[in-house]
Amino acid sequence: MKKINIAIDGPSAAGKSTIAKRLGAKLGYVHLDTGAMYRCTALKCVREGISLSDEQAVCDMLKQTKIELTPEGGVFMDGEDVSTAIRTDEISLAASKVSAHKNVRSDLVARQQEMAKAKGFIMDGRDIGTVVLKDAEVKIFMTASARARAERRYKQNIEKGIPTSDVETIAEEIRQRDYDDTHRANSPLRKADDAVEIDTSDMSIEEVVERIYQLAEPFLLKEE
Ligand code: DC
Image 1 (cartoon, rainbow, N blue to C red):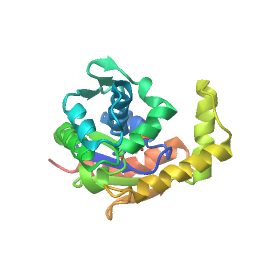
Image 2: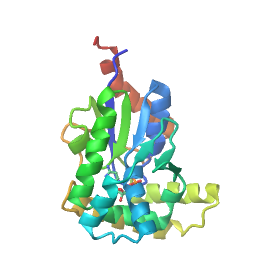
Image 3: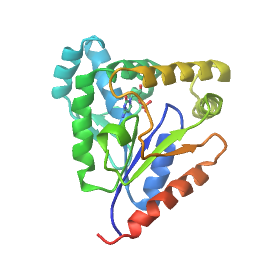
């Protein structure tokens, strides 16, 4: 079967990673979570005391940093498994700050483009369809209401035993992050003109995976 690339963009907590993982397993494709790369950058800044607003210092540090995303979903920074360390609230906030820098983005975008060259990737992020993989065969813009996303995040926190705020507070934080992501100067979150928008508020994970699979299928059946 022909291999293609699938781009999934959308706001935080819309379910991109969960869907990308499931779809990857179904298609035998590798899921690349580009947010994890911004999170690694932020983690190293925090650990090394580099100011998040000092673009040059962040970029210099990044040049000396190896980030590996394994097909199994592991995230390694300079050989250390940081899969859990990058998921704290502090690092989410810091990642959002470093991701606003133009030169940080161009460094990570170049790495992402290099990784996806071989095709057979499902890449999720904010600028995949608009910048990183402009030529992806399938582009998805995944949304869900702030309330639906907050409820999912709340449930997830409870299940994982993570201390959690109430649903309304989480919804408010999500609205704030949406605003920041869509209003930043460099590569703001926006739907690519040729992306298909899927509102997952009232859809199950299986329904979303099936919908994207249906969009991908005609490309998979094409001759190379
Ligand atoms: O998807 P996430 O929450 O793990 O992303 C962490 C941060 O990185 C978030 O603030 C958005 C930013 N990001 C980005 O600007 N571009 C991407 N392709 C992926 C994430």
